[in-house]
Each structure stands twice: as C-alpha cells, then as structure tokens.
Length: 79
Image (tube, rainbow, N blue to C red; front, top):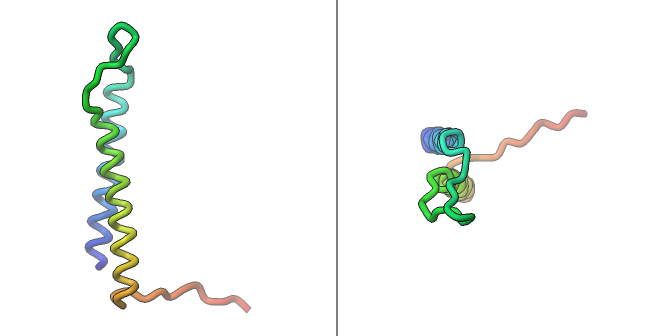
C-alpha cells in the first residue's frame, strides 16, 4: 500500500510539473481574427490527469481502510 501511495504522489507531482512546463512554454494564447484556435491544450490535459490521479488515490485509500489494510491511528489526546 505504501508503494501505491508513493507512485500516485509521484505521478501527481509529475503531472503538475508538466502542466507548469506547458503553461510557461505556451503562455500567450494563439488567436485568429479574435477567436482562439481549436487545438488540444496539453496543460489542461495534464491538470485533468492530476485530478484523476488524486481521485483514484483517495478512493484507493478509502477502500484500503474499509478492507482493513490500513488502520487510522489518530492523534493522542493531550490531557
């Protein structure tokens, strides 16, 4: 389970980094006669992948908790 979470975090960070790269490379929008060109935007795709990976990670953690693979420990109560 630890490895799955680690791989998911690395994938999320890589997707976020690639979105930043595409944003910096294509900062200005391409317009033709006042309308934007219709082309696939790699930054939007990278951010969509990041959101998808985050949702999958959250669902996997919930399923692992429900199946008993991980146990919540909570914070110790200070008295």
